[in-house]
Image (cartoon, rainbow, N blue to C red; front, side, top):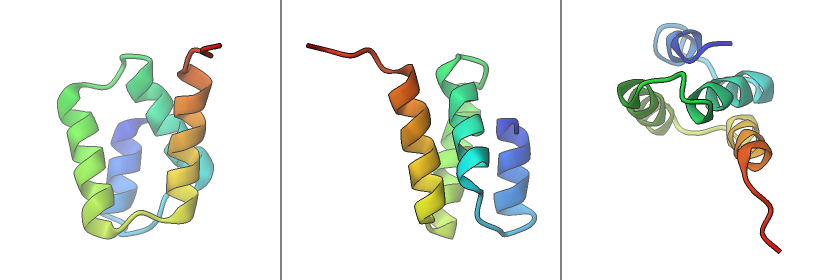
Length: 71
């Protein structure tokens, strides 16, 4: 799912994203494919709607997958 589709689901359909949808959108952000404006829009839309547990888990999983392990 692209960040554009995720935004449409939140704003137009007024529904929570699934864990996989949120993770996919964050992967796009972390891969540099999303613009700063798209990231801002996603964060604001989530905040205005109220973040669900599945959304937070999906976003966190994507961030962990893109992080570097520090020892």
